[in-house]
Structures are given as C-alpha cells and as structure tokens.
Length: 258
View 1 (tube, rainbow, N blue to C red):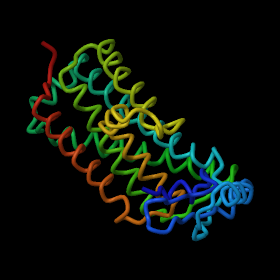
View 2: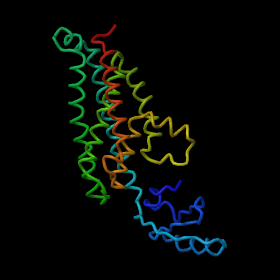
View 3: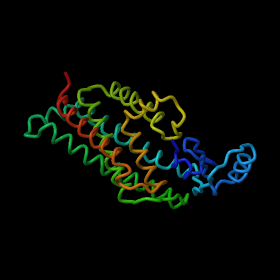
C-alpha cells in the first residue's frame, strides 16, 4: 500500500507500485533527490513505467515537534496538577469536610476537570502563540479543530489523573504512580520522535495512551490540514477514555484517608 502522507511530508523521493498490470511510479518534485532516483530507475529497469507526480513541502523538525511539546505540557499539567491536589486535599482532611456537604463525588470531579482544563488550555495557547510567532511554524488546518483536540486531550488526561488519585492518600505514592504513567507516555506517544518503523506491538501498546491520539490528531491538523472526519477515530478515542476514566474515578473516589 502506498503511503501518500509520507510523500506529502517529503519523507520519500519516489513511490513505486508494481502490483498493477502496468508498473507505475510517482516522483516527488519537491525532493532534490527525486530526479536522480528517477534516472536510476529508468536506466536499471527495462520495464515500462507510467509516471505520476506528487508534491510535498519540506517539514521542519520544529514543526513536527511543536505538537509534541504542547502535548507534553498538557500531560504534566493535567496529571500532576490534579493528582497532587486531590491527594493533598485528602491528606489534610479537606475532602473529609466536603463529604459532610451535599456535594457528590462526580460533582467534585467535574469541577476539578473544568478548573484544570481552563489552566491547561490557557497555557497551551500561550506556548503555541509564542512558538508560532518566534519559529514561524505552519498551520495547514483549522485552529478551532486544534482547540477541540486540545480540550478533549486535556479532559482525558485530567480524568486519568483523577482516577490515579481517587484512592491514594500519600503524596509520595501518588508521585510514583504519576511518573509510572507519564514517562512511558512521553517516550511512546511520539512527543520527540515517531514510532514509524518500530515493532507493531510497540505501536499497538502506544495506542493505549490518550496522548498518542492527541498528538496524532494535532499533527494531522497542523501539518496535513486534516478535517474533523479525518481524525474522527482519534477524537472518538479521547471522548471514550474521558468518560471511562471519569466514571471509574467517581466510583473509586474516597473522601478520607483510611
């Protein structure tokens, strides 16, 4: 199967399809090496080829990295910002006093999600605007869609942090559990490097993390100009994980230490 996205991102000089009755090839005119590769192909093969053309702009690494930096900021801000606060409230007895009020666990969790969401998205917007102005990064898609991805990704990560902190009373244990989640996520979700070419089981394992789907959708919008239909799967996963984590966190939530 031909990977057209790699051609558009200037990762390939030429695409060749030998499965058709007549062999075809597509040359990337934006690639400096494309002309040389084409000449080598035609001189070394006696078969007739039908020529096609694909075009793509060179993607700077900083443009590919920016969504990863934004995602990493969301991850640490959402997980640690919520996790430590909940554990500290429980340790200091603040949650025990709230239990005496008519407040339900799901109401408290939703309030925590909304408050942290405002802070996380505001910080992400600040970083994006500054990086775009200084580094002149591209934006091929919709800003509204990028904001939607950020909101859904942040809610999913906040809900995960609430789930982790739902029954923990020790800040040390909470820190260990949060680090246990953040470091594999930062390594395998594609923050700094792509997992293309890695074993399939690693890619499948990486898809467990909400950050993976957040970054995949963000890069598709920022670099490829994807529409909401193109990233509907990633958005659906983020919505589903948010609901699952939030409900599980509400069911497991305890107001006071044992």
